[in-house]
Figure (tube, rainbow, N blue to C red):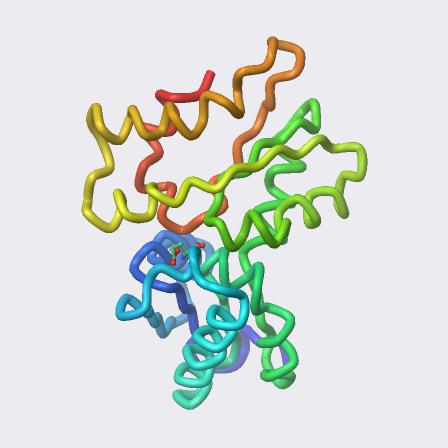
Length: 208
Ligand code: DGL
């Protein structure tokens, strides 16, 4: 039987409420499924913590959802997807465990015409090189540049998603990524963090 035929919910977790952007997309794609969402707001952010800590937190979140009987686990957090997905797949062999990095990388490879892709994400995700690796696996000739934008998470958590302060922070992070001459400019920007879509207007105002 395919996983979609089982009646149990799909478990989704993130370090906080940012993953609700992923949940919303899942609900749109799979309107007949039920979901169980865990946001680990008590321990946010994951993006600045060590790989060992993020993996420990991710395993604890996954265990809580698994104990409630889920048929699939979606790791909505990019940092946890980058640092803990392999461990989670080993822990939960009996259910599919899906992260957000590979689908995000695939979407970027499809959207980019030149194959010159910029990635913004948390420190943990960028240091791990997760998006770069996933993009280059799919499109070996791609050119990938990346930057961590840690303040974006704090701004989104504060509800500061628009206005001059957010736009100034967005410019400070993003303009160096888009400083090249026209032919060398990235033609695709990956928002590799659950919180960044909340700042989309400011981010768009800072890139060509
Ligand atoms: N959920 C994290 C991610 O997508 C962002 C917030 C955090 O640092 O915990 O990487």
